[in-house]
Image (tube, rainbow, N blue to C red; front, side, top):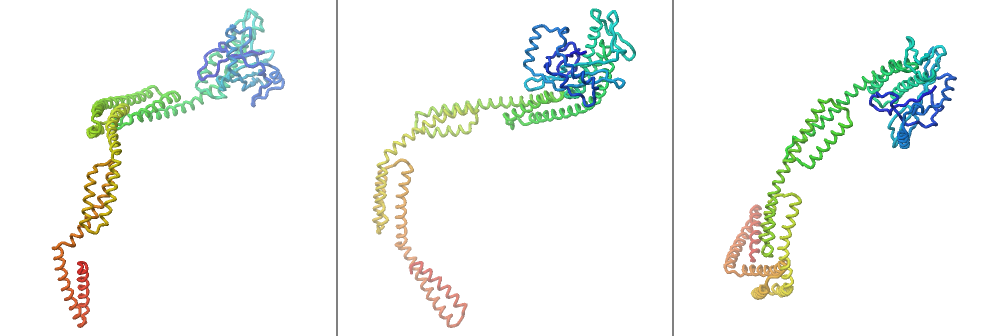
Amino acid sequence: MTAAADFPPETDAPETAGADDNETPAVADDATVADTPTDAGAAPAADDTAEAESAEPAPLAGDASESEETPDEAASAGSEAADVEIELVEVDVVEVVEDSEVVAVEVVGVAEVVEDDEVVAVEVVDVTLETGPSADEPWGRVDEDGTVSVREADGWRVVGQYPDGSAEEALAYFERKYNDLASEVTLLEVRHRRGGASASDLRSTARTINGKLEGAAAVGDLASLVARVAALTETLAAESATEAVAAREAVDDAVKARTELVEKAEALAARDPRTVQWKQATAELNALFDQWQSQQQNGPRLPKSTAQQLWKRFRDARATVDKHRRAFYAELDEAHKGVRDRKTRLVEKAEALAPKGEDGIPAYRELLDQWKTAGRAGKKVDDALWARFKAAGDALYGARIEREAADAEASREKIELKRALLDEAKAVGDERDIAKARSILTGIQRRWDEIGRIFPRDTERSLDDELRRVENALRSREDADWKRNDPEQKARANDMTRQLNDAIQKLEDELEAAKKSGDKKAIANATDALEARRTWLKALGG
């Protein structure tokens, strides 16, 4: 006989609800036992295998006679089924063997509920239990008054009454109860094989199922279910110990990581507020807080005392940084306010110079020097005040530019006149008579001054430099001529010439005498001295 069992989606939380209280969407009708591979470790008998292949799994929602869904609930379930996809991913065939004889075949289908390409639940979608006890010792019996009993190792145990039906219906009812319990055991085993759930959670579920099996009101081989749960519990106990060690290591690593975040935050809090780049420091602290939240949400749960202690240190460090930042910006705002007031007064004074035009430029330069030493008032305020201050200066310098433009226009004729005078000045260098050359240059200089200043200044300087070169050339000629014609200079030159001539005559006599005597040293000395005196005489023009 067959019966369907309903179970909630697989979660990591312990399962406490009974099998009758859970509902899941129905599996597709084309999922049959014929597609089910058998376990590698159990080779069913030929007759039992044929029977298993011919059986079709019952719908997950249970028999129609036992369903308590309302029409609205059925419609809701239908709409949910339309949004998800149920895929049969595993089918197990479990044989119960006694005395080398297969006495039961249990077929379990495990399906994945897929939503948006993601597995959101694992469910047992069909359980079929084919029991084959001997005719002499069935698992259950029904008395005439409807009392149902189950066969156990120490005899028969009453599991309940079913007075309003036939003996077959009574047995079928309590056999379905057994199937439900068997389904829970099988699902627990499947969850253990597939992994994903922690051993501690599975042990909690095993304890719950074991409690249901003790004195269960069901007809079937309850002892085999108890043995399976006991074997699985023993395995899970060993795995729980391993998980506990890994959990402690994960907690130690998490404590170390949190401590590093705390130390970094405390290092930021310990820095001198006057040397901190607050924009960068705030970004670093926010990044540390984001890492803290990520570790808190995704990492292992820390012991309460340790977590509170670390959080208090991290929170205090954040509070210290925030306090320093507020104090810094409050002090900065106060300083900016003073600078803003000083620069505002400078702007007002600069704007008041506008009526003076070009004459106000010296005063504006003094104000500009004060502006440079006034300090910073914040970028926005500084930019706004500087725009006003610069506009006031542009007005003053604009007046100068206008005046210079007018002067340049008026200087065009003057420039031509001075260039004509420069052409005349070329005759000064050509005149051999120095007195005449000086007279020509003096006339040119007088007319040059009468023309007056010209603009722009660069053009004026260029013209003045050309005239100055003519003046310097004439002055050099005059100096040389004066030195040649100065009586005192001439007298000194004549006296020096006479002395040199006398010395040369004397040295010539000494050289002649040395040659006659053959004194080489005297010849060399006389020759050197004679050459030196002749050179001096040549320099004096003698």
